[in-house]
Length: 197
Image 1 (cartoon, rainbow, N blue to C red):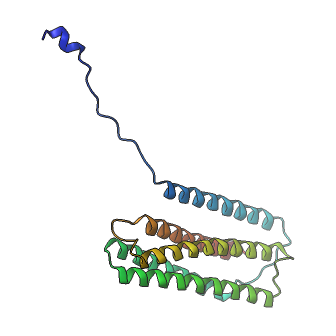
Image 2 (tube, rainbow, N blue to C red):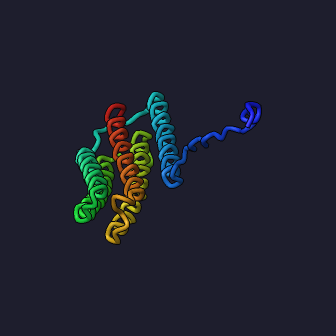
Image 3 (cartoon, helix red, strand yellow):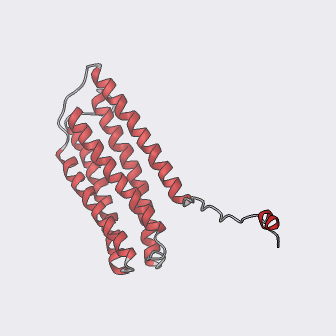
């Protein structure tokens, strides 16, 4: 083979690795971004409306403090569930998801009790916008938390069917990501309301 012939042989290049994203995780992140945009617009509207005056000042019901602690601990139990799944510890996985689900329900119950305390303080959904915003913020967050409970329930059922384990973590990863996000979102809203109420 001549030198010229060797120059005519095409050199095969290794194909470049393509970046791939799990479609369900991608949908989750799109959903999270849309929720962030929703609450960013709501908190901006809150600040604009508050600056206009005619703003009712009132104390946040104390139960919102307790519900914040409950949601924080539910995030810890959710992480425990994820870590247990990685270690194939099915007993702890089921226990941790069950605890997270129960704490989520307790949080919702405490939020409802907070609404009742607001009514007792004569802070209503219809009336002064400061009360309206609080109902909207807590109601929207509560709605998203209910969706988080549905995701938790599907993960719990999957755990009892041994479909969540070290080699199949997608479901529990999605569940943990969404739950931690809801926890962070509530803490942000709570301290936002404490600061600007």
